Length: 232
Image 1 (cartoon, helix red, strand yellow):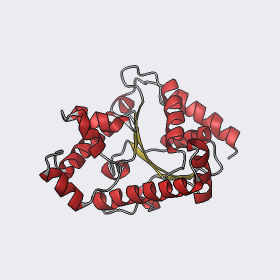
Image 2 (tube, helix red, strand yellow; image 1 turned 60 degrees about the vertical axis):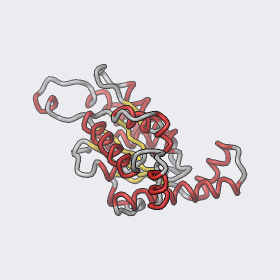
Image 3 (cartoon, one colour; image 1 turned 180 degrees about the vertical axis):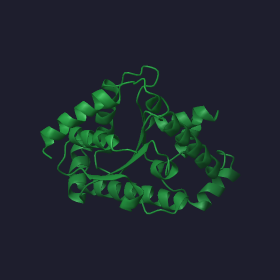
Image 4 (cartoon, helix red, strand yellow; image 1 turned 120 degrees about the horizontal axis):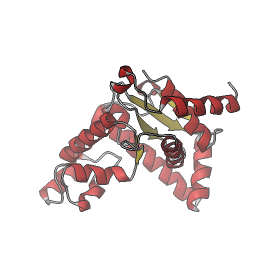
């Protein structure tokens, strides 16, 4: 299918399928949620922002707006569980070693990291159940596995393209960007392995894996919306 045809079909889907209906089957259906896993430099945030704009622009349910949970997810977790704001830095999208966790607990810096993870899990499940949530990172696809209203997405790209994007975006040196990509990819991979025993690069734990190398942010967002049409 050509890109213009895809865009037209996606636009039709948004207008027709996200509008409220009176039939009982639609009323009983959970609103959809999207989880996004992304490689470092695969334009994850820019794509999520484009996706959020498109979905919300056509959302006619004022009582349930589409909400993007990226950096805001940490604040939401703390709010849900009545925890102080300073704990946000201890809710990372990466693995934390057993030794570091134990030391932090002994020093009284925060509740156990396992407890914070369980709080994270609970909040993500609640957001997914309520619908119209775009949840970025923190193993959202693993936490919501089996939920019929959730579409799980993985954004990837070649190392060369991701490197170039981050150099242009941050103005950092090649060496700094190389280290950033390696650190973020390894940290996210370790987080998923540590908490869920999964390989973050296993395509079978996602509904759709998209290579962002040659597709614009808008195009990727439209492809994700098209996938929502097939969600069942």
